[in-house]
Length: 148
Figure 1 (tube, rainbow, N blue to C red):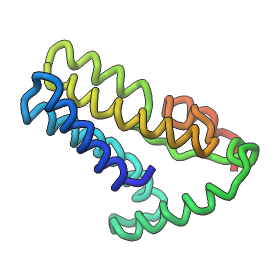
Figure 2 (cartoon, rainbow, N blue to C red):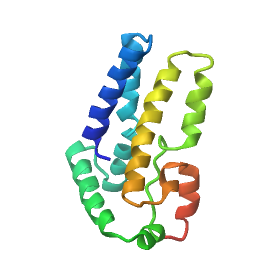
Figure 3 (spheres, helix red, strand yellow):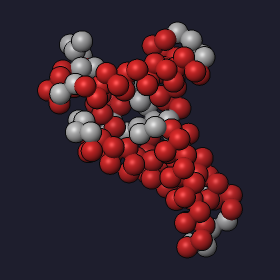
């Protein structure tokens, strides 16, 4: 899913939470920010692959990659290496959830990230991509071994 979609839907989700539940504006803002800033791991991966900090070049890289990726069959996708996205996995979610027991504001970060992942899973389902790509970066790392 493209960043602007995450930003727009994250904003709408935050407004709905703000309107329906008794949360502060700051809490809703945390939900909003975490609903799209979780994608900073995509940027970090782009920096690693393209050896540049140039945001536009990294965006171009991902747009080109996305076009090529959509052309592959599911069998071809399963044979390919996947990017290791450290913020897109249950390991980070577990840490954020545990932190929310001590620091209340982490529950709002957790909700924003959870909403982001919900949107990502819809995108994965609609594009018939392997689900494990966004379940665990550790699993992706182990699964990438011996792949092209």
